[in-house]
Length: 107
Image (tube, rainbow, N blue to C red; front, side):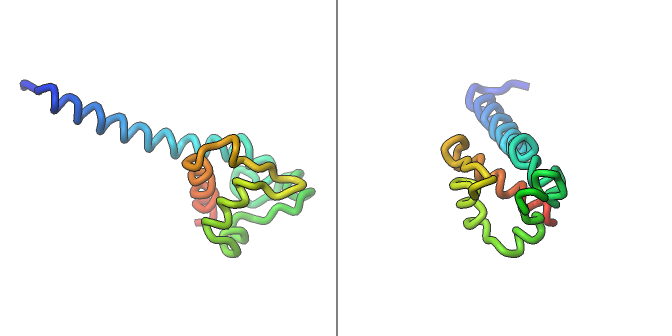
């Protein structure tokens, strides 16, 4: 089978796009587990020592009360005194991924 340069380029671009989408999803979960789970818990139910101390809201309750946009704002700006602002440390795509992952825990 003979492939021309254009076909090979499309194949490479398609593979890169698929891998980047998978990497973004994995990165959101990794960021959540690394930065958020200490309070929110790996399952999102906030049943951790720090979650209890800071009165962190269960993910199901947070999703019921907050829009995706409101949740992005909280991730961007933080919620003092316990939740750090992540907007300067993470890209808009990473923040969006974190919120999407957080919201997926409520399903």
